[in-house]
Structure formats: structure tokens, C-alpha cells
Length: 123
Image (cartoon, rainbow, N blue to C red; front, side, top):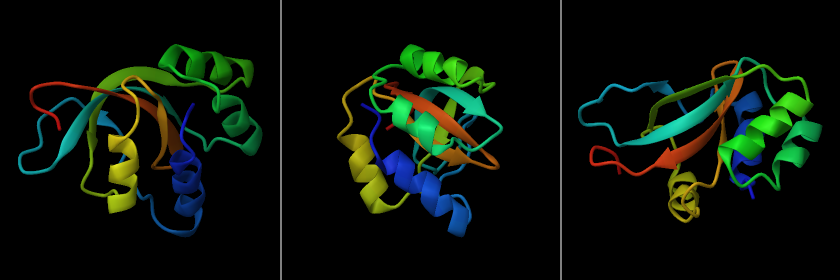
């Protein structure tokens, strides 16, 4: 199930500049903690109905199916997620996710649904 930290992050992003930085193309950022991820990036914020339908999604493919159902265009890519802009609570919640579990993060004017991938150069 996609954690509701994602919904909280999405909602808080309306009042405050984006809490998380967008998913960046894969390139090492020296000195910045980061996580490798597979992502579905959209250029729009996800509405309440889409967020509700994403709750039972336990994979990126299931999340893509929900976005398709709602007619939301997205780009699937691999990149890194800089973790320096996340709060301690968000980092703790992300660390407790089962491997492969999608999370939703605000990204500029849109959203990103990410699945973190373990790798030698990420935390």
C-alpha cells in the first residue's frame, strides 16, 4: 500500500515549496545522501480520487495502471532521489517501507511515484 506520507507530502507542498526535490537523472551527487529509484513522473498534481485508487498499489506497474485508468500521462524513468530535502519523519517512514513499495512525492509542478532500488552508491 502506498504510504500516506506521500499524501501528506503532496498536501503540504501546496502551502510550502516542495518538500522533496524532483527525481533527477541518474548522476552521482557528491556529499548528498540519495536513493536510486524507478519512477513514474507526471506534470500534474494527483487528485484525491487518484490518490485513493493508488492506496492498494504495491508496485510501480500497479501504480501505472491506476494512472492509465485516470488518464494521467506519465514518464517512466530511472534516476536518483536526493534525500537532503526530506524531514527526519519522512526519511524514517521511507526507511521502513517494504522493498519495492511505491511512494508518492511532489516534484516541481507535478508528482513522482517512486520505487527505491538498493545499489552500492545509494543509501
